[in-house]
Image (cartoon, rainbow, N blue to C red; front, top):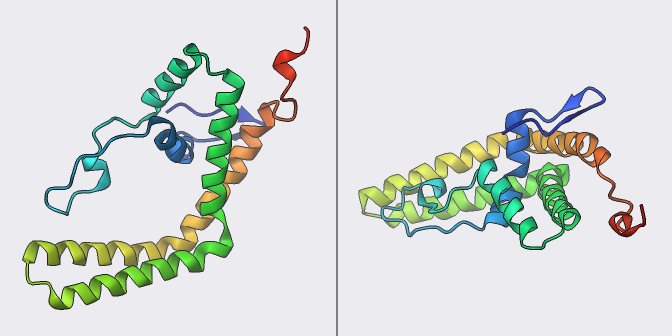
Amino acid sequence: MRSAGTQAGHSIASGHSEQILDFSCFSLLNPRFKAAETGNEKLIDLMIDVVDYATFRKRCHELASQGIGDDFLVRAIVSETLVWAWDFGDPSKVDEVIQRHRGFIAFCEKALLIEKNEQRRSSLEGMIERSREGIASAPDNQKKWASHYKTFCEVVLSRLPLEDPLGPFKPR
């Protein structure tokens, strides 16, 4: 994905702009998923529909051509993006994330005690490992999302006329 823009020496680097828009892309594109066959599939492997910037952009153009106002669409995407970034970047939620992972680890460990099927045992062990990684990375993830939020506000919001919702309706 191309950079979201530059202003005052700031830019949203390609990977960052794509990541900060991920949840807005999912919300707008609403992809379908197929049922898991083994239980070891990653969510991305179960996705039927493509979710990427090109598809996101195409869908935005389709909506605009169907009568959805550009200003409304931009505000909806910006709002959705900020809500997700703010939530993930909230330092007060790091402990909540860690507790959620710990609770899931305890659930999986309890299930491991009685699980006999090797494939399901392996799946549970993988989920435990990913949750342990989630615990270890929670503080850094929060800081990364807080940085995404700040950069998005500096680069994108500063370029949008959000305070004047009647702008398109004013005589020119």
